[in-house]
Image (cartoon, rainbow, N blue to C red; front, side, top):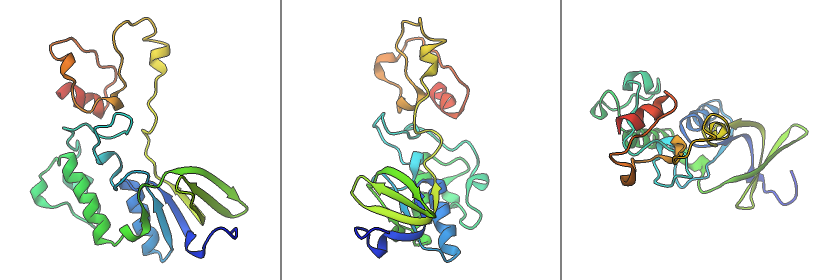
Length: 200
């Protein structure tokens, strides 16, 4: 640990991301008696379930409902409230995750509005430097940033190379745009986001 780092910046575990997986990781690290800090670049927890109109932030669509049932989706030690129904809306999921974090006292361990700018390992110690200028050191590192942070644009360079229409990546679609109503739209892909778009 360098002289510029305070003792409070050193933890057993650093978790990057405070979405679903990051929250669960944080909770179980604490349960094992480890000290932990979770770093989240956004203003609140929830990851993709924290909806944003900003197309540069990967989130669910405004209308997205969970495609797996509450009983399959809920955490084993934290049942979803019955009133949110079998297939909860994304707002309900976000509130469920916030309730989870509150119930297990996770918020004091989470640093919001903190973007990671560099991660490196020196010897047996991880050094996580943030845009705020802070550096967190730890013995262990958990990366829970999600699988969908960067859109895959390869089809635009290959299959769609000669296509003259407007091309959007699914991550950019938060609501169906008025300017495209009554037009023919082609959706490539058959995942959950594609289904959301087709439903809209």
